[in-house]
Image 1 (tube, helix red, strand yellow):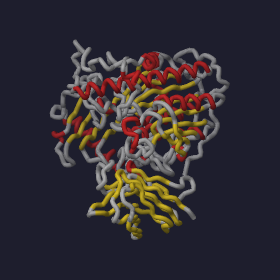
Image 2: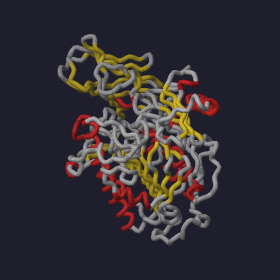
Image 3: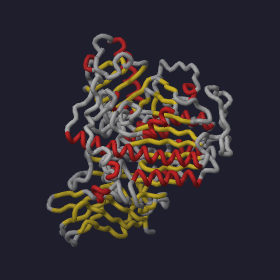
Image 4: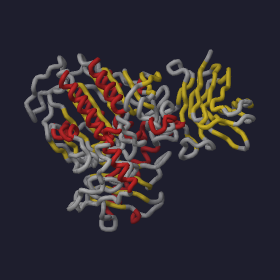
Length: 588
């Protein structure tokens, strides 16, 4: 059940003494909230963080007008970061454990920023990447968003995004997206579309407080960008321009360099789009009373400049988890301020709760802390605070790509579940921000203490209710009928993608009824095989007499009420071929 929050809101500005508080045009006391997050844009993919190549004048200016959190952390990959951002909780508590393999579905009992702010009268919208479940009851509309224009799964052009995958090299252009859960065709480049939709949402809701979650899928792969932006970078050498910089720098292959050119072009396109959005706030006289947050979801996927930090996306070293985080709120916050205190994605929800005067959920653990005292310049004692990082496919693997950071130290495990302490790495981030000097043999007491805390938190998180009882997709509910089950949400073998012969199932809860079922396959099928649908003890099969078809149907199939692992496959020539997607429509 969702938590019932108080509706009384009102921003108490009297305690904010860092700067004079000007009047603002919008006739309301509560701030509008815009959270902007980009995908796979690393700490070094900005001009203001020292990159000599990428052109980001809007973001650079935003940073100088913001409170900058210079030690801000996220998860090493996409879906875990997004679940933590929206709930204030470690992703494992929310049921999110992977980016696919059925592990990127957030439990519907989680309370998101959108739900929290809606209880205070906010209108809410999400534009771009969701990546927390493509089916009822885990879609944006099920998690507090009034308006949504999104792509499916982890990225456009990926297997879970059934409306763009087969577009191949043009998946980012003229896409079919999901507008309030219905397919809708759009013209243009994806980042332009998402920004334009966000601006329209702001215009439509300018008279009352709104929460706009602008979640770009760029510069994530596939690296597609309008040619006018690529032309700005086609002749640069992304590995040049660092003479005299003694920080570590990764070796870049020719492919890395070409990837960087495309990524910088995608980032500049985002920068231009954010310029449009901020200009619209000015035109609507909303800028002063709008809280704007900018962040990215993890480190860069490819090798390129990352301000000397070690590692990149998917890694628990700094390059994978430390990202820019800027907060601008002219009505209340000082401009151009640096904060060095360790902070993280889990802090955004409690910060917004305090700013917007809505209650936090009381029936669950919120891992984050409000950043407002830091912004206000108050003394806080966070010496006891720690952050936990991990990344492996499916579920966390004890001590493999796992870390705990606390009080300027970081313990990193890249080893076995039963490894001795000496197999770990210990870094003093204050004196060694690039994680080059392992101190584990020199300071065993510190390493032992951090390992003990890591053990305790790991054991707590892997026993989280939403992880042990993984979220199920609900089939046959009127909120989503028909329903498409895609490859991103299929579990089973590791690395399910677009292969033909692979084993995968969907964790579902089925409502009793008669169903028409369609299965789409990646490649056309031979006649003479059998199409199977299996759910618990129930098995339905029929011979296929059609040759060279890629969609097969089972009509009028009775399915009882049940929780099950739904298995679908086509058996022919001793092969078992998994569908690309399965559509189930309840017809009675």
